[in-house]
Image (cartoon, rainbow, N blue to C red; front, top):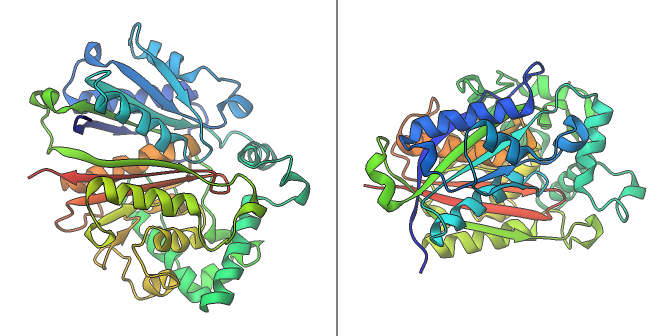
Length: 387
């Protein structure tokens, strides 16, 4: 029997440029916020899991979990760093959820952190390309913008997806980012501005791509018996699923869909006893504008082939059929890789507490989706506000 798990506390730095702040200090800042928010004592924390992807090549630091645990004064508990490319934070969260659900501990903290903006574009690109199977895909010279540019071309050929429809995702998310104090690149953009931005990997243009970022986020999870300490509205973890897909581009049968996302979504719905239409809000992995469209279709939130049309019709806006990325998503909030999955959960919990600057009215069920590499790793979590 698995125990119910609740979100006790949340914390986050802003996402953006924190060049003068060491990576471990960002993580400690977010974690300290989450612990304070939880109302729990540090001595009650039984495990720490830390999501991070490229602190080794970009920061020369690999034992971050132990460093952060020590800085927080968490003595003699397991401190584990988790890596899964862009899904690192989501996977770390699932480990913390398992630790409590299985009864191994009553309280756990999960932290996600990345520091990227101090490095050159070439250094960041090289580090991010570690998320590929470089022995097989490396010789092609294809980077992630190139991969999603191909996906867009195929989606457009199959479903008639237009530049105007994809731009609607950018306009929506950048606009949401304006009201989010944690977001790096909120903006009011027009279709013309997007069309005239620099070409990155045809048809992807500059505003279709998320920015590199620094930042950290943290979540304190607890068993139900610890909720007497909880001052905040109770948010329960209804489901946490993790799947894997092919690490090689050529092994994907269809670039308009990621099998890992489809499987993780189906598993999460089954765990929670819910259907896609039950989801009020979702923070999903819009590393590129076309990715939001594909992800929304893979998760069953939007009919296959209609993700772009729904965006243009504002059906995925704050007051639409389902609110997708009301935080601004990766496109506006930024993408500090290891922190992204935890940052998504932070945003969903804010919504379910009724505290978000872009509040979805009466939000009760929220989802997060975190995808790594070429679809090699995926996590989907579902959360519910308790009555």
